[in-house]
Image (cartoon, rainbow, N blue to C red; front, side, top):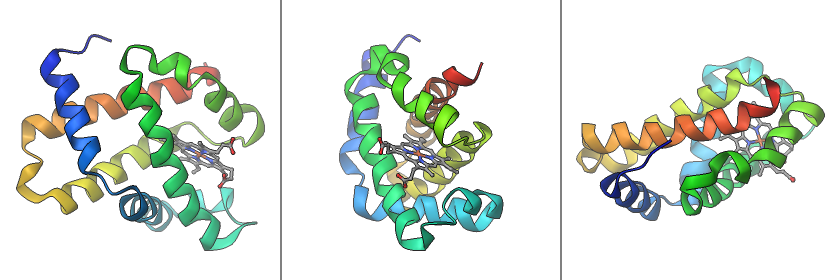
Length: 136
Ligand code: HEM
């Protein structure tokens, strides 16, 4: 993947405005409500642990923001964990990415212009592909 300078600065700027403790749990809660089958992965831990995972996911995104040129390598262990150990269906990564964009859009309002949103979604699609790499 190639990133232009303006894409790099857009991603850094969106990321800098995201409150991990708020947006993370909100995005994960949305996934669990809209796509209830995702609850099965968290069943044994209950809601508290799934909100925690929302925060964990966003903290992990920080690594991708800081390693834009090697997102696949950055997430190779994490992809292995979700595939081999947790058995998470990789389609769920995309669902979570979409819910995250919706939550970010409602938090940012007009600050998330169509151009900024497109770059943000490009970033997330690279993240989703990296997390899915172990599966294919
Ligand atoms: C654990 C990241 C998506 C289910 C984790 C951990 C990280 C992480 C960093 C902790 C790993 C460790 O303890 O070493 C991500 C990222 C995602 C993502 C970056 C997408 C952008 C998902 C999705 C599901 C899921 C979509 C299920 C629907 C789990 C479960 C655990 C886990 C069940 C173990 C329990 C827990 O830590 O809460 N994930 N994850 N993850 N992930 Fe994900």
